[in-house]
Image 1 (tube, rainbow, N blue to C red):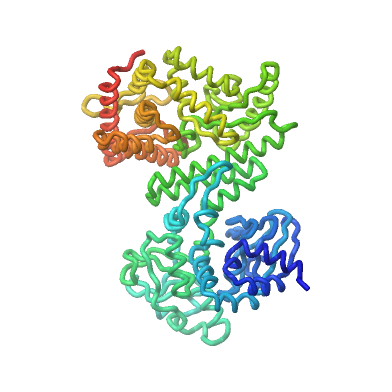
Image 2 (cartoon, rainbow, N blue to C red):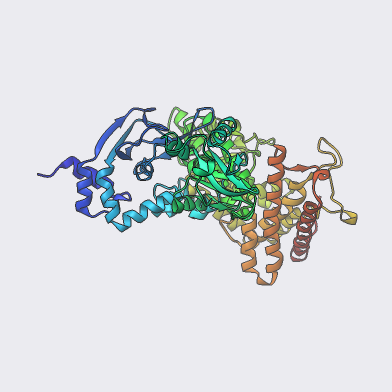
Length: 640
């Protein structure tokens, strides 16, 4: 007679590796010995330093937080396990206690799989064995689905990041607080130093070069057991030779080295060999801690956040991630995509939560549009929120009632985004403003008026709204607006000429003798405005030229210039230079903002190095060249 419970468990397990790699009869055998455990929210499945269970686990329903324990003994979530995620397996194979906590984030059903039943299958099945090795090496529960589970996914579409973007490009903070001793130091003295300095290892050196390492494990196995006296030399229990690496070590590299050599610590030296001075140390614990700011972990945390305060705390971690990427000199293309997706997910989650707080569901379909830098996928720092809302057309008698619903929703959303860290727009260019909460037909009429009655104000509004990106809702509505915009611009050389004139309103920011032009008055007097004088001229130029070519769905400035380089090979050199300058200026502004804990817009030139000033001047030369191209092509100059 068929065991229906085992059959159902088998069907579930077959959807997830490593179980999907088993033969059917092997899967049934495993399913028949699985324990089905129910846990209430907040229940600990295992805790740090607890002896490893005879089982490992897979989430059937619900979610489980994996938590590291901070120095203050406070739990901090470093990963979240959803349906089909395996956890608690590594200690069983490594023969060690649990290094983290596993606590249910919500009411959960978890399958417990006996390791004694599973281990023979892992040894005999090469595919399963490879899966486990790759899982341990990359610290992912499912390394075979990096292209899917590793994506930062939005509601409608997502940008996937390769494993290297999540791991190989993510650096490990190196611990420089180290204790070094000579080989003749007594074990007792070394242990006393470790306790006093509150570190978990000591490096044995000769002429400041590492010859061995001793960790808590060595003390436990050699000294506490009585095999070696505390009065003996530290060299009697040290592990030698020392596995070393240079300071530019990444998470993936460190994990692979630790797995390969069966170690928990890597010594950091000047050239990555034991032949030079010790600079620091990386431990398995450091790797675990670094996962807390991993983008995929942050994405899960955002999607599960049930309060604005939680989203605000996650936002702080996103800033730490951004700062780490910049310090490691990771290409801005990678940084921008990751930070955009995290910002976008934050906006989505905020809207989702606000919809639940509304008295009724939306009366019609709608879409939330991000404008400005977020719409261009260039928003890295805490800046103003610029947004708008479009809703489906309704009969005239229902229009104001429908608008009132979405204005109420937008007020809730913008208020919470402000709490998270997105300041209110000073010009009130937000979806809570009735001027920017319109039906599809109203938006089409609005763009038609802006284009036909194109004074300076209308041109400026057009420029802002040409850079929108859908953040939430029905993409058909925003697509309809995009199609309308390109229809009314077709053959409209007069409007493009006016747009060109506006793109020239901020000329090259260098005056006579190639000096920076700074603000002449106001609270930012004598400061350099990198947004107005550096970033905006390139943004305006890229938007104008891409519209001239009628290219849709590219809003990022650097990507626009890269596309233009393909469309106009004869101007490839200048467009490539513009793409580079755009990324360089945004990166420079972001670094300044993180340094000064502000938007990074206004810069005190006195604190810039000569090298920074030279780099900026090169970018400004590019601005002058692209503006000369615009003047010639559109036969225009800026007018007031």
